[in-house]
Image (tube, rainbow, N blue to C red; front, side):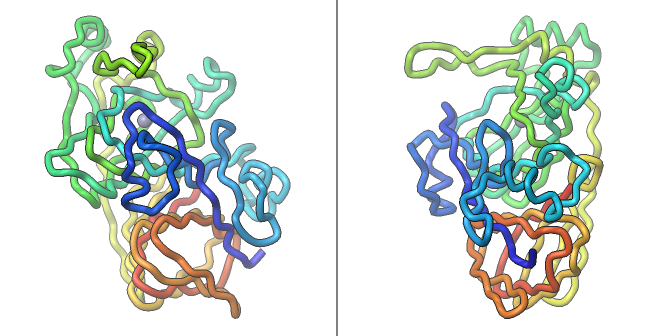
Length: 314
Ligand code: ZN
């Protein structure tokens, strides 16, 4: 199929959410505590729907199983999940399992390795990215005594930063940050600390300390992210990460670009700008907040305008 597949996101209310998904991207959000836009998702907890073409109205998960030639993947389920997150308040300190642990203890769910591209950050915004405990005993003590200030690693962030967050990393987005997250298609989170917050009914959110202690890496080891930038006519590609979970790149188009036809299906999110995607004699308008998939072998095509994308593939 030589047609891009545009997707309709779905939105999730969160205690820490806000209105920035509307303010920055113009989305019609359901309420003032909208924390997550599941933009490219086939996860059963929130699937995006095809907006155009012969498969209009179909859920991405159904497209994946009924039209395997569009994806030619060895994965049983659509393995990726692209989200935009509006952290209007601090997220809980959390950790995610790897494939092996999630497969065993979470009904065959995938593990969750994720990565963040910082879209927007208020001055002074920080994330929690790892911890300083050197032994399992120290980690347990930190959690039992609530010794967060001493052990959690805080990192200041600004727009354009990128963080790789493998499963087992203790982490949290801080207040005032909007990110585009590329992750494994998983919804398993073990909460360690939620700032003793109460919801509107006075309840605290459930913590999952035992599982969190099981899966948190000690000591926390970081794989350094090395950005690599390649320029060609009209296109600047910045590679952030490429491993067995995903490849994630930032694409900046200025003028006209003719990217190489990819043998894999690729997923795109437009973070800024306006322009178009041209294929054969068809033109598809693109603007900030659009999300689409190019199926296997799509093209040759060109991208026109001033555009910033996050591109990802398996
Ligand atoms: Zn997470």
